[in-house]
Length: 309
Ligand SMILES: Nc1ncnc2c1ncn2[C@@H]1O[C@H](COP(=O)(O)OP(=O)(O)O)[C@@H](O)[C@H]1O
Ligand SMILES: [Mg+2]
Image (tube, rainbow, N blue to C red; front, side, top):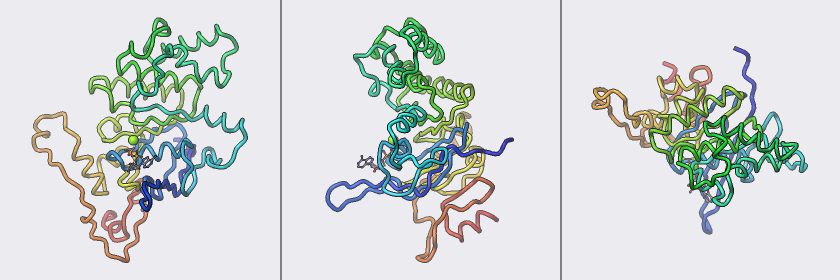
């Protein structure tokens, strides 16, 4: 395998919010990880742990409180020329949880999809613009006839396909998908995940795929990161994380996944996580430590030595 090239480097990212006078929410608290070109990195963790904020800071919807985000070596938060900003806005796209909320109800699907094509001047004529729209519709499993309809005429799964087509329209390199299947019927979730996986391979895209549980993420991700209360607590190759979860919070998330086989499902034990299990002494320093190649856990040196055994 060719050496992995970093598309993004997230270094000590901090995103704090002031809520009320003296209250500060550390939505993202000193998080560091890399995203390699052409990979799918899944990020999981319960609601409120800072997944969306991480995604939004990367895509510059917020000015970071601290740390940096490098995209191809360039700090995304540094001041940029108009042309550079436009280029960033094209290369990085976002797909949202609720496609309906993110689609303007008064816009025809053709115009929804072509918005980015227009902004970035990617079509030379009206005819080419429509040809691009038709092709995008087919790419996501819809068809030409859908171009003149409005968002309310589509099912949830179809709307998410439209959201995907809209993101793809500007030929991005990197897509942040923020819980793209959480609002869909379970029967539809796999279809959308499969479509996203297929497109990622075909177009050599890089994804940050955010989800609140580990069940679907497994199928799409090369690596998975687990967040808990603003911290990244574990990250590693997807198989390692499933077969050998080390952080007790990751173990608890995994224990929450129902098993397809009814016999193992009956004996499945849910583990709940309580941070007191670590029993940290005052002088113990927590850091991301690499237990096996590429598999990092937020732990103390004492825990690290136990993992290594
Ligand atoms: N714009 C904001 N202002 C204040 N607090 C926020 C804001 N956005 C998110 N938060 C808080 O930051 C924390 C992380 O939120 P979020 O990133 O949305 O979590 P997740 O996507 O994992 O559910 C939560 O406590 C949330 O209430
Ligand atoms: Mg979220």
